[in-house]
Length: 168
Image (cartoon, rainbow, N blue to C red; front, top):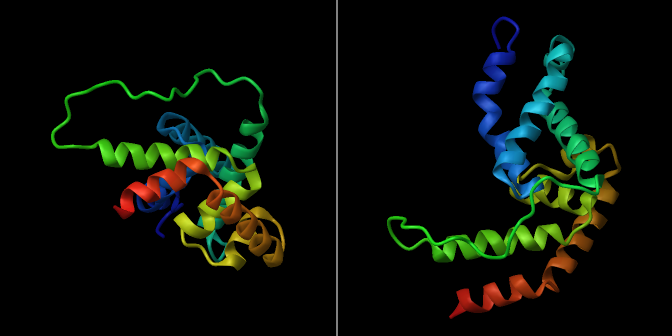
């Protein structure tokens, strides 16, 4: 990257970081806040971070750590509802909305670590070693946590109901 490289990094990787943040939080506005907070924390150290082999892993680690501390807070300013207001959208988006809600709710049933491992490993397709590096744990911990998360999701009634409908 040229110059400080921070602007170029953001331009190249913000969408991917935003997607990860959404999978972690289940809320676009909170995901935007999470990405911005992680970038604000990374900016003062960017010269050092940019010299790392994969600076994105560092930023993702900051993001996961911030999300973990945010998710430990008891009060949240907004509450998610089970109903989606009627809107006039072009085409039928009901199946997509149903799928997103089912996945979001199922992810909400996981522990913070299980959710972070699942998002980084499955949705972001990071290798186990990189997930371990982001989370600061052993590769074996990533494997066992992912296994536990998948087992828990297999028992989630919302997903079972969704997959049954999709199979028809």
